Image (cartoon, rainbow, N blue to C red; front, side, top):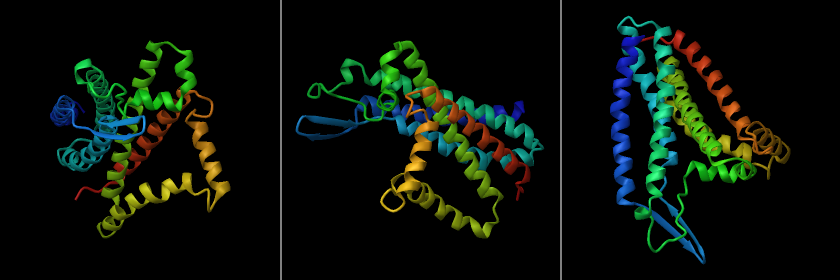
Length: 254
């Protein structure tokens, strides 16, 4: 396991270094889009979603590229999966640290536009959490809020990483003649059918309301408890990882 983990970490650190450097350059050059209407100014220059997308893509690539290499070099599937879990945790932590550091840098006085005193980072995870769990922010200290924000972002990044791994695992396990259809169906499912479950109240009001109520409940949004949402993400990561392992055991290496 040590050899494959060392190899994966080497690739990961190279990719993360380039990624962090690009984000740092974008932060200091202050590339942004400003939308104004009356007294409302929204500045879109955040990198919160960039980390999530990065984790998702790395999860796809690390399975697709490293699995075949590992098995062909006599690395057991079990050792590869253990290494994959370690990389998932490390990637989630490092991406969260990158986001936290860049968010702190962007709050420095020299980087806030002089003509925009109401500057906000539209994709700041802390602000998103404050909108979702307002009561939690009113009743807890800054240290607990910062720790909670870090853990939530880490779990989100890790979840998207393992989801990317699952998608790649299904692709590798699938017969070649179905892979094109699979790639076409994924964005339709993820950005079309799945969002309709939350927005189809016009056509299926009862089903949409039930799905929304369940989602708000398990994420702790209804009760204002972010720890319930963290528990949900943890359970989802464990279940997805188990499915990935089952797929990995039966994946044929061409």
